[in-house]
Amino acid sequence: MTNQLFSRAGVRYEVALDVLGAIIAHHSEAIAAEREKATPDEAVIAAAQKAKDELRTIREDLDPNADEAIERVITQYGQQARDLYQ
Image (cartoon, rainbow, N blue to C red; front, side, top):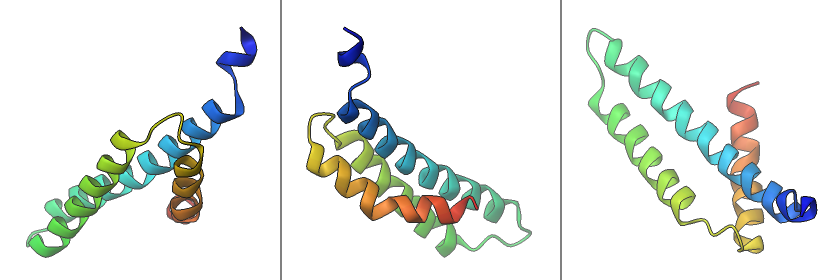
């Protein structure tokens, strides 16, 4: 049973979700910071919201059994997530 709970595929799926979540959180922070400005730039807010929405869709559509899609998310977005929080 332990093998099923902690399979490599399950861990990689969680990593992919965390990567996407980190970038989504960054966009949320950027939106909040922009809205706090005396004159918020609505284009900046809209761009960040669009990026957030796209990433949420990817996260929601990610199948925990789709190993290739999971690895593609990690490869495509992993470095971006690391760069945002270093």
